[in-house]
Length: 198
Image (cartoon, rainbow, N blue to C red; front, side):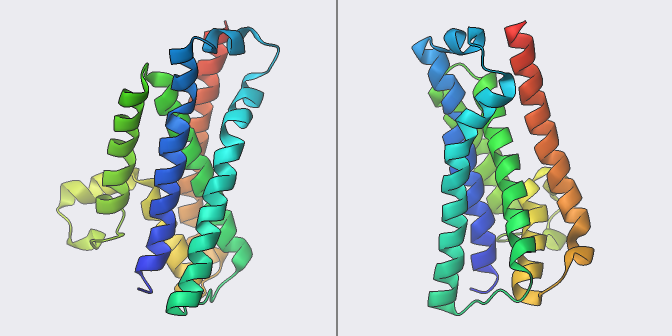
């Protein structure tokens, strides 16, 4: 349970954030209201914030609930810095929201968006992140593919901070990889909005 609960945080964040946000933009497309948003005076960054802030709050509450339940039910105490832990949680949430919105902007129906978000979160988060199976015991091909799963880096951070009490110097590389993932997904998304608005 001590390894399962920290992993559960990343798993739940990815599922809730990616799936919920993947349906937001595509829902506007299906309703035909996306064009109204595009011609509104709102800047792309404001549109993205409006679409992501509610889900960011939900993911943050979910992560906090898992931490509290982990302490109450399994006596899992956070040995390291709470600030460092929540910094990791926030970067994973941003990366997840960016991925979800990117899926949403690239698809034209909620069914396709839902399937794409399940395929790109459930399988990598469950199988390739080290959540269930140790990455070292996987075939080489899967070990290489696991580098594309942002949860893999988060698990190193959350397990290191919660269970071992490590500091930033031990996990800074994982923060860099997560930040790159978040910047790429959100950057591509904002670029698409700019292009769509002409």
